[in-house]
Length: 508
Ligand SMILES: Nc1ncnc2c1ncn2[C@@H]1O[C@H](COP(=O)(O)OP(=O)(O)O)[C@@H](O)[C@H]1O
Ligand SMILES: [Mg+2]
Image (cartoon, rainbow, N blue to C red):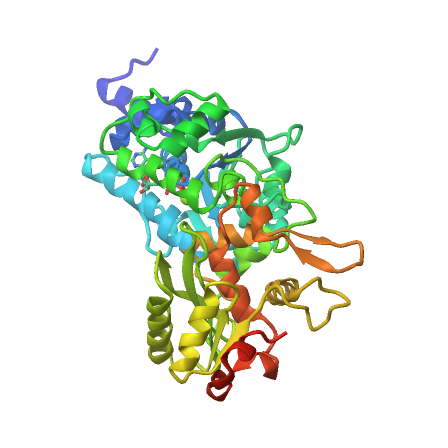
């Protein structure tokens, strides 16, 4: 019988350790504990629900309000996934509609997580690069983020790991074929998909997976149930308090660290949206209530077209048109929209302003932007602005929305014809909107049309919108003015006409 020397024993133990699989991380079953212990961060209740769902379900879909910490929790789960699985056996893929969403949001949060772990003295494995890739120290790629245009169906091929986690951020904007590609790399039971986003478009794959029976675990984050909706903060916003009452909801009693509060959905912001968008607008349903709006056939410009216009980056054209929508009631706003070819931006937004002040702002905008054509909504108070501009020597197109359409066979009035022209621009991909202009997007998405008994297109009137609890679509109207077909010669009010003042204004 041979006896092992102490040295032999050490050699044997080292050899056995080498061949024995590493102990699974105790945090594999505890993503929330991992975030707390490794990064020192707090996870609020819905983020916890998301984390536990990703641990337990192959497919998780989160439809959520704005600013709920969706991208944040997704980034933490990416870090947890790669840190708790054996090195080289796990992989993380993320995608989102735009490069900015991939690079500046999700992967920026992943880089922040890596920095936090390092600062706490226990770095995450490998390195997270500025190129939105994660590599082990030996160069092995263990994760990356790509926008859909850079990852066609084949872009994900070749990822053969046992543990793959795919994050689809802003999932409503991710095209259908990418969902198929994601399914193809997550075929085994150890893989996970997390699709998160604002549910703004019911005509998407994201909406399909959020339906009951889809096989996905669906989590909804209603903004009215987020941690800042405390009794005090809700009571401070009367319109919000009234909404809570109407929906029979109680305020939140959830503890979150004070440092987190300023980053999360703000009751004052919600109250502002109640006024600016209206509780009944599709955008309020998605951005605040975290649910898919009911978007019927009667919506003039579907959400996907609005989103595409916001994501598009076009070169401005040579011809500059100003569209001026003049406020009529106390809460309405006067909007000056500038369109240069496909590129349209609000360049003036004023409340409670006299017509002379508006005229001054229009003239200033003309000089600043070298405007070729001014179009003013000349109905009601706007008529005063038309007169004053003409008096000061400017050529103005007096836009009378209630007048007959040029093609009166198909359109109930000029407003319908102009709005239809705007819709066609969206369909043709010939419009580039400010991605940050949520109010414009909200107003455009709320406009409905119908076909009259005579077969003409008719746009819902502002009065009917008001009755539905929607504010006046000032920004959308100003855009529509810039996008209407070229002016008819008799619409242009020129200086000489002003001599015969009354007649020149009533053009029809
Ligand atoms: N639990 C958390 N701890 C610290 N910061 C957080 C947490 N959740 C969210 N944040 C921060 O709050 C902000 C909004 O979160 P984000 O994930 O971008 O929201 P969403 O994707 O829902 O719009 C970001 O600055 C994010 O870093
Ligand atoms: Mg986000």
